[in-house]
Picture 1 (cartoon, helix red, strand yellow):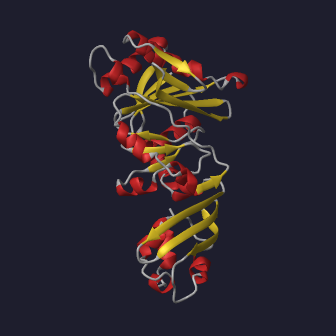
Picture 2 (spheres, rainbow, N blue to C red):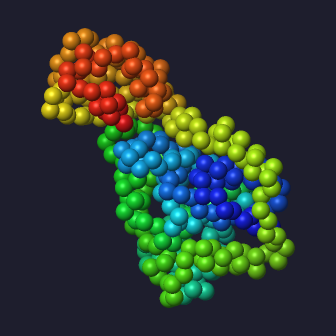
Picture 3 (cartoon, rainbow, N blue to C red):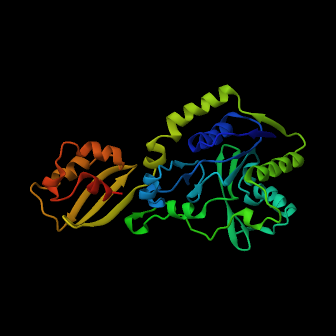
Amino acid sequence: MLIIKRQQTDPYFNLATEEYVLKNLAEDSFMLWRNEPSIIVGKHQNTLAEINADYVKENNIPVVRRLSGGGAVFHDLGNLNFTFIQTGKEENLIDFRKYTEPILEVLLKLGIDAKFEGRNDLTIGGLKFSGNAEHIWKKRVLHHGTLLFASHMPNLAAALNADPLKFQDKSVKSVRSRVTNISEHLKSPMDVMEFATLIQDHIAQKNPDAKVIELSQEDQENIKELVKSKYSTWEWNFGYSPTYNFRKLIRTEKSGTIEFDLDVQNGIIRQIKIFGDYFNRFETEDIEQALNGVAHQEEQIRKALEPFNITDYFTGLSCDELIAGMF
């Protein structure tokens, strides 16, 4: 087994690394890694329905789609992630208990009574500290999980506090759980990197053939290319979302009530209707037609609206307020 040391905290690079190792390194591998504040969404989720878009924008939080299914999670440097990548027998590839057992063993050594519960969670006293997901590629399994060690809980709640009334779709919805940090249950204090060392040492003891390595410069350059072509792109992180209908109602003192109704396929607005009790000089159908076929992305919508004087179509409404109504 390869124990791959990871220092990067860039979420785009870290998610790309998993796919690269899965598809390009033949040996079984284990990795521990951390991300700077970011939101990681499941492969089959509607990204905009999982995040608090205003909070994400205000705090410049990266949003990255991963290879595996499951729900959206918030990462910060107080959260430790672990990844197993192994070749197995086709009938036994999905096995959440197998890959979480070493984590539970480490916590038991620390005097923490942690348990595997439900489909894919690890808990302490009924509170979740680890969610796990898996992705199968050929006969290779990628199992990864979060370990809330000393995460900032208010940020976690704020980043994932999406408005469920805005969306109607068939995407996989996240189930919010009551959570806890591992650090709150320790008998003696330690930091997240000391905890990481304990886990790495335990994995090495369980696998006598383990070799600790770092990714080569060539590997890192290849991963950067994967970041550029996939993991940092809007098409993967947002456009990959399933078909959805987005609705939002805004009220402004000068413009009154305006309601937005968008049908979005593969991240592209296929139809938009705007209703309300606003006043206008020109017909708003011009705005609707200009937005059909445009990505449901602020930058692209703003570009499509550049030819228009918005107050001619919605009296007293600014372009920023109009765009905010679509997210």
